[in-house]
Length: 395
Length: 225
Image (cartoon, rainbow over all chains, first blue to last red):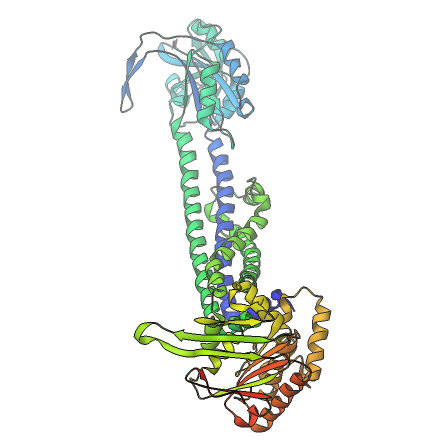
C-alpha cells in the first residue's frame, strides 16, 4: 500500500467522475492532434497546389516607367530610363541563399515583329524552364526544340491561319511552326514563342533579356527573403514577388493556423476547467477521508500528492487515448480538406511533415498531463489546507 | 515514555457576542500506560479536549506537551509527523475508506512510510490477526459487521504501534455485546503498555479505565477519580 494505490483505488471507485475528467482531456488532446495533423496535411497539399501555379517571382529591368493602363486597356507607357538585363547576369541568382529552392529560371526577350504583314509580339524563351514556369500550357504539336522553330499562341495561329509544320515569315526569317498552344485565356494566346537565341537574333538583342521569371515556391524559404537576396545579386533590376500567389499561399495557411491554434486554445482551457471543477467536487466529497488522512499523520504534501497522482494518472490515459483518437480523426476528416487527389504523401505529411510531429505522442501526453496537473493545483491546495478537525466534525 | 501534560488548555470558538467557550483552563497529566476515560454531557468539551490532545485543534491558550515536546509550537508538518508516530485515532463512525478492503484500510497509515510492501502487509495482517479479522482481510468494509468495522478502525489506529490511543465514543454505534468486545480489546491494548484516552457517555464502559475525568461546560469537575 502506498499513495499510488490510494489514488488508483479512488479513481476506480469514482468511475463517473474519472470518466468526466478523462473525457475532457481526451477531447482536448484529440482536438489539438487533429488540428495539427490537418494543418500539416493541408499545408503540404496547398503548397503542392500552389507549385502548379508556376512562376512567382519576376525580374524586370530597372526603369522609371509609368504604366499607362487601366481596366485591361493598355495605352503604352512613359519610359524615362530603361536599363538592360544581360543574360549572363542572371546566373548570379544561383549564388543567393535558398538558391537550392529555385525550381526554374526563365529568361524572356520580348519585342514587336512583323509577321505576314501584322504586328505581333515575339517572345524568346528557354522552353525547358517554360514547362515548369507555365505548367498550364497544352501544346498541339511540340514546343520548339531547335532554332528557327516557333510556337504560336491560339489566337495568333487563328489570325495567321497556321498550323504545325507550316512556315511563318517573321521579318526576314522563315520559322517552322512546331506547335500551337491551346487557348488559355491569357496573353500567351496572342504571342509567338521562339527559342531565346532565335528571338534575340530577330530582335537584334543578342545577350540581352527583357525579363526573367523564377519559380521558387517551397516549404521553408520566405518569398520576401528570396526577393531581397535576388535584388542584391542583381542590383540593376526590379525583383517582384507575384503577390497574388504568395499572399494567397500565406493567407490561406495563416488563417487555417490561426483557426487551429484558436480552437486548440479554447478546447484546452475548457478541458482544464472541466478538470478543475471535477477535482474540486472530488475534494469536497472526500472531506472526511482527507480528515482521516491528516489525523493519522499524513502531511499536507501527502494529501496533495494523492490529488496530483489521481490527476496525473487520468491525464496520462487521456493523453494517450486523445492522441489515438486524434490520429483516427485526421484520417477521417482529411478528405474534406484536401484539394485534388489525396495520396500517401499527404497522409505522411499529416503524421511526420512537421519537425514537432514525430514526437507528437509525447507532446500529446505531455499536454494532457500539463493541463490535468495545472487544473489540479487549486483542488490539491484546497485539500491540503483542510483543517482535519473541521473535516472530521463535518461528517 | 509518552507522558501527556496539558496546562491551562482553553478553547474558544467564535468572537465577541458569538463566542462560545468549549474548554476552560483545563490542566491534566496523563502518565505512560494509563487508561483514561473522559466523560461529560454533550457540549461539555470532551471531544474538543480529545482533538486538542490529538494535535488536531489548536487551543486558544495553554500548552500541551508530550515527552517534553510542545505540540502547538510545531508546524503543520511536524504535527502530522507527531500524530503518525505517537497517536492512533479511533473514531465513533469508524471512518473506513469504503473503496479499500480491510487490509488496505489498516495499511493506510503505512502508505507514507518507506518500507517494502511485503513488510507493511505482514504488519497489517499481524494486527488484523490480533483483532480476529485476518480471515476477512480482503473484504470491503461494507461486507463486514459494525463491530468488525470498529475493530478494523482500531487495527488501523495501532498498526503504526503508536504509544497513545485516542478513542472518540468507540462504542457509540455498537450494540452492547459488540461494545463490550471492543472495550475488552482496548483494555488489552492498554495492558500491553499503550496509553488510552477514551471519550464516552457510558458509565459502564468508563469503568474499563483506570481513571475518569468529568467535564461540564468546558471545565474539569472535582478531582479526577
